[in-house]
Image (cartoon, rainbow, N blue to C red; front, top):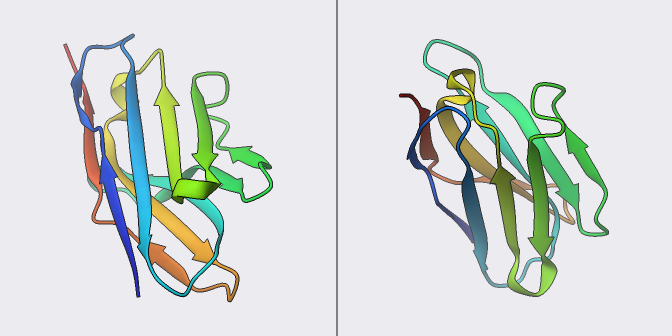
Length: 116
């Protein structure tokens, strides 16, 4: 079984920055892709950014140039550096990990609120 734990959310003013972290733990698995998704109140969950084990990244158009995803394969950890945050970035951010068997795992989420 794989456990996913996120951290780093919080309240930040518009234009500010936050760094989210997500660690996958357990035994008997190899993580292939990791990523971040978000769900704002009353809206569907949407992709923010993903990164493969080899480092290939993919970003939602709304965050390109402001968010950067990175990972440490040795630690099964993924990071999301967010700058120039906007009120519309306010959401619950969820970490997702996919192993080589294409089984997916979700974290419990971390809240990001961008408000003055």
